[in-house]
Length: 410
Ligand code: HEM
Image (cartoon, rainbow, N blue to C red):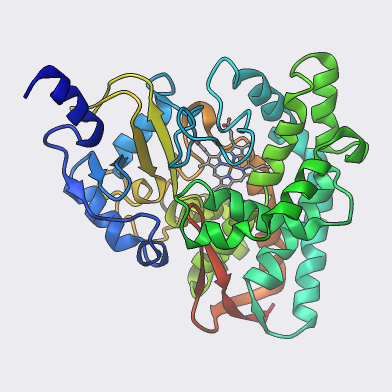
């Protein structure tokens, strides 16, 4: 083989020695039940190659952590989905956070990190806790059976989050479908994307309209983002895209997070009782549920240069798929990884990512989940499942369509 042939071959063939797998991580069989596939991905080798899309994949904790924290070698600006923005046009102008590298990433990141810091969120806490109590009271007034997704996990974020941003009342029903579409769009153009595409036009128009300064209420996080543009901390072009990043990433994720923690805590009467008596365990309950369920399952990176991971040299300009959900259940890092264990220290999980792109909204997610759980623990003595779980398929999120439950009032 000549040198030219070899370099051509490198474009379509993985690095020699890297196992090629015929797994489709966006196929419906995979998305319905990823665990057996995760097991294969983890156990086959530290780095594998997925023939279905011609991408490298990492599923063990160490390698996922390594990929997340090397922003120089594994960039985000070429897209954190399957599409390579160097060759393909993104479906919308790229995010100035998620899909940006330093130095462009720095200013929007520091503006949001400050606005969404625990210190700044403290003003919301009392209101959110009181809203959570009201929602749980409404739930109890309707009887003992409920759906943890449609009656609770969706209701709470949609009540508190748009107000915190400063959105108007009209059109909020667009938020969930927009997030669903955006998270699907990180995958290939499969059925999930094409079905969502049909209705996305008016939803996108509504979202873009909400990001404009004149449509954001005084005192909300959205207005504060525009004030950062007035100060020159970010540009006027970046401001609406920073607001958009909250509307994209801030709702479906927390709905899935709250549903995940309720799913994890149902049918665990001993844990439920324990947390009722010791609320200092609440943050750990949420963190362990995020580790176990990993509401955000995957993200991609693109190599900027030949990058070595676990002894494998991945050439430049290759897509690398990181299985966060698989890393969070890697037996090399976690003892009894598939168990929900309140005595475990779940810190270090990659459910919120790691490194410079680590979730900037995680304190919002925590505050929402803890507010809902605390209100439930006050008023509910027992929580049991009352029917089969139905999953909501999405190319990136591991969500729920239905979580039937029964509660016993305290
Ligand atoms: C349980 C809920 C949530 C989960 C599991 C989650 C997960 C993640 C993950 C894994 C990343 C890293 C992406 C990467 O490395 O490429 C991320 C980034 C991000 N998240 Fe979250 N998220 C949640 C809630 C939220 C909320 C509530 C917001 C907004 C209020 C938000 C906004 C963002 C933004 C803007 C980024 C990009 C940060 C950057 O690139 O610097 N997320 N999230």
